[in-house]
Amino acid sequence: MSATALSSARRVVVKVGSALLVDRKTGLKQDWLAALVDDICALTKGGAEVMVVSSGAIALGRTILGLSGPQLKLEESQAAASVGQIALASAWSRELARHDAVSGQVLVTLGDTEERRRYLNVRATISTLFKLNAVPVINENDTVATSEIRYGDNDRLAARMATMMSADLLVLLSDIDGLYTSPPDTVENASFILHVEQITPEIEAMAGAARSELSRGGMRTKLDAGKIATAAGTAMIIASGTRLNPLAAINKGERFTYFAPSAQPVKGYKTWIAGNLEPAGRLVVDAGAAAALASGKSLLPAGVKSVSGAFTRGDTVAIVTTDSREVARGLVAYDASDAVKIAGLKTSAIAGVLGYEARGAMVHRDDLVMSRTGGRSKVETGRAGE
Ligand code: GLU
Image (cartoon, rainbow, N blue to C red):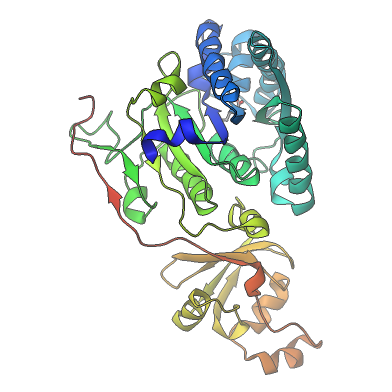
């Protein structure tokens, strides 16, 4: 299955990292982009719907404006994004036009996916672009994003977009060709991983930190993206983008890491809950409550040991065990101030404490998604670079 993952996918999200698209000295890597667009149009001509999540606005803007130095101030990166995004979008549009294809720019901020109403609105727009045979070209709206309220990396943004659009496949093109047992640039005998059945804590421990000056993400954000994607039934590939025609290379059998989608994917409304990037709070639950959740029950206040975060009713919270393992996510039925008061109480005691007749569950099972746990991974025995 993984060998034909790209050629058989009907809806694909391709995420392009900044370091692939932009050279900090010379600007946009025109030839590379042209070759990638050839690959994309080969997929669309074969009947697939393709959307692109393109990084590179800030890097390109910095080059155009001549802003050097290791770190930009927030206002400078916002200005760089403003200049870079217009150049980036026109490059995509120009290259797609060579194939008589039309592109549609979609710039999103965190709230556009975290708020349900706005999420549905973005989804409707992208669906319409697909119906009109336009290629959506997506990026974070870095010109207005602040340091606190942003995705920050396009790996997770791309995963959120892929699950929002029920894509079959998310391809992360990167300056590394996949996941290794340890970061291959620092650990000599790192082995390449071809297939990840499930992203377990063991797999997560293999990710190193971000290494490129240009991109915000690293292997860690790629695995976060993988968790979001695979839970919703979207397979993910991490593949090298450092060659020309990287998608054609995948189809020709160049190696990549394949992350299998869940066999029981989360569906519809619950996809939105599961992919929420910043839970507003945490509920620590006892073992009995964790077992009840696993058997499909709601979370009752009696099973909640402690509450943290400044959430309001309807916000997403992470449900964790006493050893900090996340077991589920859900929409909480109480404001944090009330949740604190009723944590540990029997349902019959709630009205007496709050002074009003409230709903029983802290998180109702209809608003709750279990996290994927357990599983194994297959590891190729070859050494890095072989
Ligand atoms: N949105 C950023 C940009 O276009 C890139 C974020 C990332 O590197 O993942 O510059």
